[in-house]
Image (cartoon, helix red, strand yellow):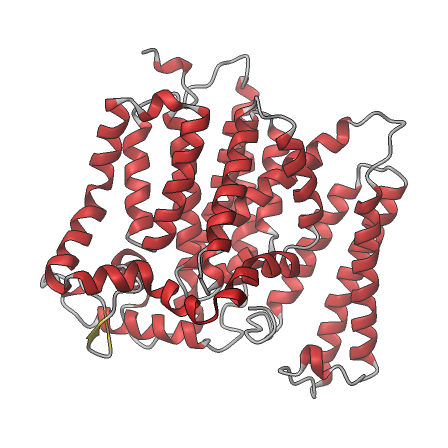
Length: 455
């Protein structure tokens, strides 16, 4: 095999030398703006209940001796705790092992890992799209999906899960051209299994379906499976040790605990994730739907197969299974971002006499109107208890800050809809910049956790 033909050493015809520097600048730029968005004002809100559980787990792990190996078996109040594997908790302990735990320090590790997932998604998009523009658009859309921003900033394992999930997808794509990446694939799967076992299983099923459709020869290669087996060995070892100590109770807790909770209200769980996507993925959901349709029309391309399998297969699994937390939705968000990035790129190549879809500006204008009405409610102290009954806006500064945020969102969506009507391609830049500023304003407030409103 000539390694110069692999993606790691791309062909000059596909990626000229100047493009290498553009990739480096893109990685650095995406990482920089992601760090600003994900790590700002982490101390601005007290810990939620789910974060307090993680805080207690990290505290007890930090109190154990590293040489004793007891940290390999997480405990909560002295009792074995199997719902979160060891790696994510260990990474949080590295930053919070000394002194009193603060919300900011506890949330920092997950936010940093989530920040690195943004340039990783750019690398995934470069691998399947080849072109620079749809790749950077996909990464920017992913960065500005509200579920990604909110969950990545919490003291949970969601940011770390996103990092391992996207790295696993990147390794799968690279393995199609170079079997050496199968070892990296196994290691990234190990990291995912040692952070969140059930998500690792769901993503593994999804990627196997993709490979069976796109590159079936890979599944019959002994070199591929040797690399994956060697890489995943650390995770298998830890699961085997836990099973030896705790038996089947460990496997039940780590893989089926969420099922047991979701089964109590199965019909509600069927609509939980679709409603969450509809509520929290605007305005990118508009473009993602068109991107998925465009992928369906381009089935002969690998990028279309990946987006459709990632969105349809993983999405169908989490909808059908009785799961009950937003964490399982997060690995679905990169698929939406890739679909959105591709259709935003393609919108530049429409014939000049062909207008953009009417639904784009109509939905954005409607969203702008809703945001403006809510801002009026806040200004005039309207009885909007059904919407914001958990927030205390007695301080004038808090109310003004919320109004400023809503005005920014209103202007962003309103101006974007106007540019779409006028068929001005600058609507992409206006929308991206406006959403980034709006999210910065949201996280700068003490209300960004919004447990009772958002999730």
